[in-house]
Image 1 (cartoon, rainbow, N blue to C red):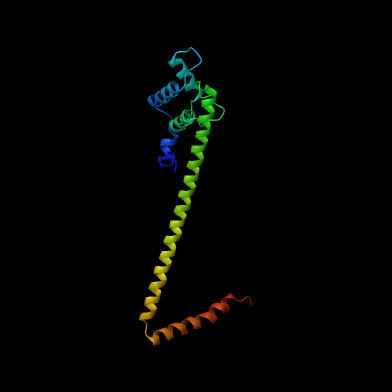
Image 2 (tube, rainbow, N blue to C red):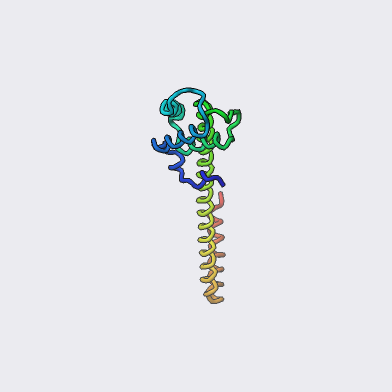
Length: 163
């Protein structure tokens, strides 16, 4: 089971706090040397523009794919480009969205199953109650009830005829 499956939906979709973003960027910058001679603050600002609009969970998961060497076509010697990180983060955001939708679907089905089970249990309790009430009747009362029901049947069927 993925660690993301244990995180509430609102945490998976919220934008990153500046401290979280900065920590993820420092993690990325410390894992790979840069070929460019820019200041780290400039590099982080460039990544910030590329990753704008994505959730903190997606950004962290995308960066971790590079650090773990799981992103295809990345030269693990150098810092990945903003576009590569953006694609990885977008892929993670889509995966998170699919997991959220699947979890919501599972929750809906679980609620439906619970309602069906509760209705079946209520119907079973009602049937048991009717059986108990019927068992308490004397044979004469049962015969009278059967005669009454049978007497109603012809009247009901007469009312239904198209004559």
